[in-house]
Amino acid sequence: AEAQNNLGLCYDIGHGVTQDYTKAVEWYRLAAEQGYAEAQNNLAHCYNKSHGVTQDYTEAAKWFRLAAEQGDAEAQNNLGLFYDIGQGVTEDYTEAIKWFRLAAEQGFAAAQYNLGLCYNEGHGVTEDHTEATKWFRLAAEQGLAEAQYNLGHSYDIGHGVTQDYTEAIKWTKLAAKQNLPIAIKTLKRLEEIQQNIQ
Image 1 (cartoon, rainbow, N blue to C red):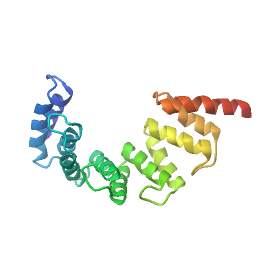
Image 2: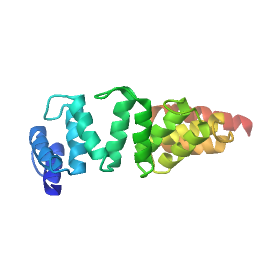
Image 3: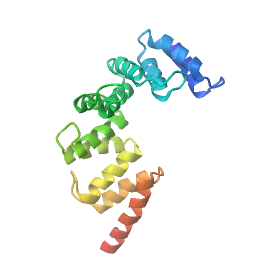
Image 4: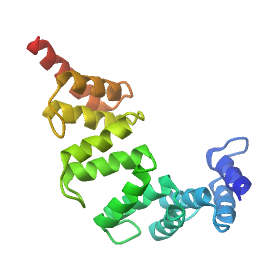
């Protein structure tokens, strides 16, 4: 199964072979049907993105769930996103939070960021900026640009942390270095504020 998944990945990205999504799907499916979680997640992506198969969100959700239930953090995050927007499943913020949290607690940066957003906006949970900032920080420390920007923003406005322009600039700058447009724009404003304070 692992070899089948890896061969599928080679066809998926055109690594050592001509890129061929149909062949990728064939190999992913062979591994996925043996219960191989990574292949189940990859097959779900194919259904989600219409790579080698007709786009089918319900089928994508099915394979994400099979991988998620085996503890695959990426699949848990993806299933959370599906519940968050009601794609392939009935919209259910409680389920979204459940899957985001499972992935976030495994250290999966995108899920930590998504969980932070939920707490920041009171989306499926009680609004809690301190909790939001905690999850943003964990993802930011792993280098996720969006999380770095959001952590910087928390320091900028004093949400969940004491307002601190030095920290705001530090995290916003890290996101800006990754070419996140909103971070680049915000960094200029923050640096002007800091200059005026000095």
